[in-house]
Length: 228
Image (cartoon, rainbow, N blue to C red; front, side, top):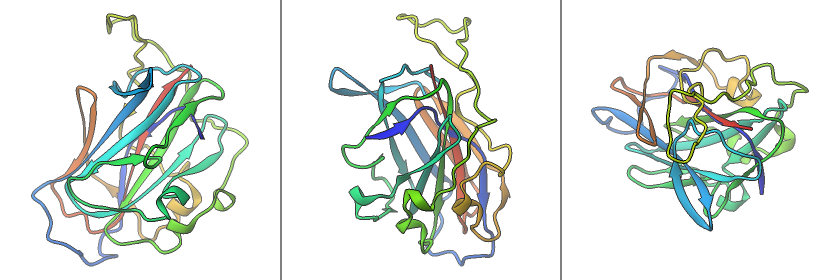
C-alpha cells in the first residue's frame, strides 16, 4: 500500500541527439493517462481534476502508441519522494508496448490518499531506451525534502456544477512543467535534458500528451492530483 496525495502531469524534457532513434516513428507520438478511484470494490474512471478525500484508493492507467521504458516517481505534499514504477511487483520490468494498458503502481496495486491536503506531483519519464540504474532504484536512493513549497491547497471551482456536488480543482490535472528544480534527483541527472513542445489535452476523463516531432530521447511529464 503506497502513500499518495496528488498528481501532476506537466512539461516535457527530452535529450535530443543523445540517442539514436530505436524505432520507426509514428505520425504523432501520443500517451494517455487515466485516473481511477475504487468505489465499492469497482474501479471507476474519474475527472483528473477531482479533489479526492483522505482514505480514497486510486490508481493510474497508462497507454501509448509507441514503445519505451516507463519510470514513475511521486513527490508527496510533505516534500518526500517515493518510487511508484517499476518495483518489485513488476520484477523491475518497465518496458511498455504500443496499445497496451499498464496499471501504476502495478497489476492490482493502488494508492490510499493520506497526509496533508494539497497537490501531489507524479513525475512520468518515458525513454526510448532503458536507463541503466533507474529500474533498480530503491526508496533509499530517492532524495527527500522537509518541505514542499509547490504544494497548493485544493480549491473547488463553484462554476463547475456536478450532480453529486463533486469538488473540481481546475489547477489540477495535466499541465506543462514550469521548472526542473523539484524533479527527483535521478530524473534530473538524465543527460542533456531540455524543454520540448508538447500538446496537453483533457478529453472527458482522459489526459493526453502528444508530439508530432520525433521523440528520440527521454520525455518527462507531471500530473497534479489534488486532495483534501
